[in-house]
Image 1 (cartoon, helix red, strand yellow):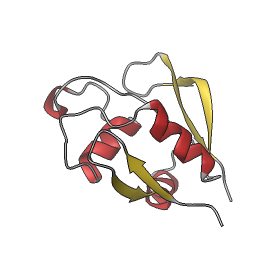
Image 2 (tube, rainbow, N blue to C red):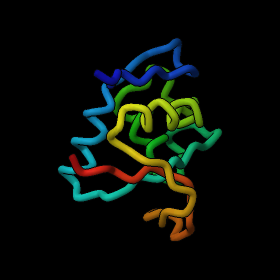
Image 3 (cartoon, rainbow, N blue to C red):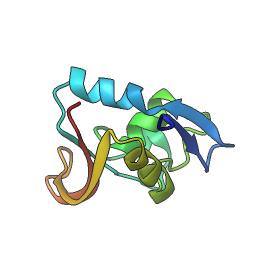
Image 4 (tube, rainbow, N blue to C red):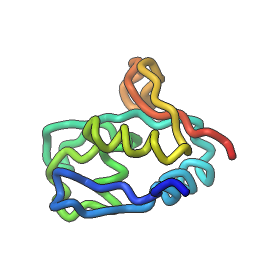
Length: 105
């Protein structure tokens, strides 16, 4: 069985369950989510539909610290729920960005 707990290395190793992200995406009809990590406080985050904002808003204790770092992306891929892609359309900026595609299981 794969480990569904994702550790946030920049938040005292706080954890969240990857199934919550997958469920959120399914519920909201999202096929993908961009990484969107930013070195800004959450109130200045320009990508509210990104993984970084999602983690900060729902799970992080350190909400003003970037959380969707590459290690977190790799952990999410290892769960088997997601695959990483380098060119996904960002709903906030309209640009192509790195992110995760949700695998329908």
